[in-house]
Length: 277
Image 1 (cartoon, helix red, strand yellow):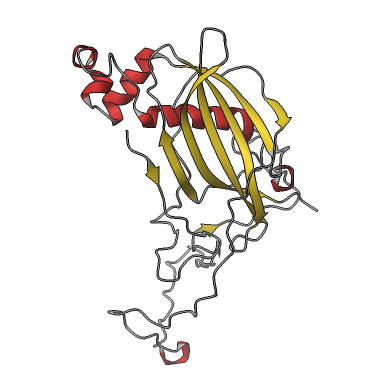
Image 2 (cartoon, rainbow, N blue to C red):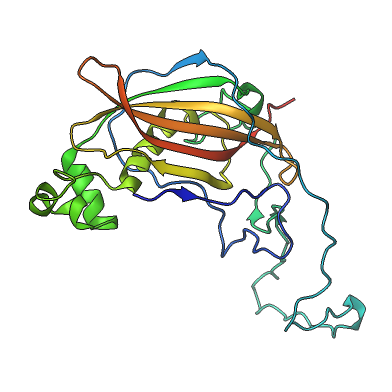
């Protein structure tokens, strides 16, 4: 399979000429989740520090005053007034209020004061940006690859013959059916949600920087899943959030329950809420 690598861009300082997230262009959250078995209870352990992924932001780009093909802005005082329509008898007049918006332009409702910060699954959060320090490691348990689910996913989303046709796959150099790489990364995502995002004050993700499928995954494989924090910094574009750089890995376990082969590696970023003062 081929590797997927996204050129490194800094989501905290987006290029003004690039499309911004909005109601009709939501930001990329991450690979879609897929039901899968999960392993034992989360086990956190300290690991060796890895190089941070966050790069230095480039020079500020002056804001453009217009875009080709668009009309120039009209001063507010020069615009003709639009008379407000009267409400029908017995119906109170309607008042329109502008909603708050994120830096990307998506409307958001203000959070009521005093409510607890929620985790990625809606429960009260216990892990915040400050807890996700570089060098911290999360054991995300062991995932058992279900053959029926593996093939059903491929038939729905990636129906290539070596994912869905047992006879052709058996007669090929693959020696049998192999999982779609997107099914494998979905297994990682589910383990990440169950063991970290269900506890953390997670917001969204600006995207992947690396996604590699390093070995075939087959029905019945047992995959051990791990998450490493490799960098963190407060977000310049999203006040109240911090950007965390993360690396996820999956290893196939051998008969002795020891890691046999690395099958997946991904590097990505996530936004997490700062701990309330």
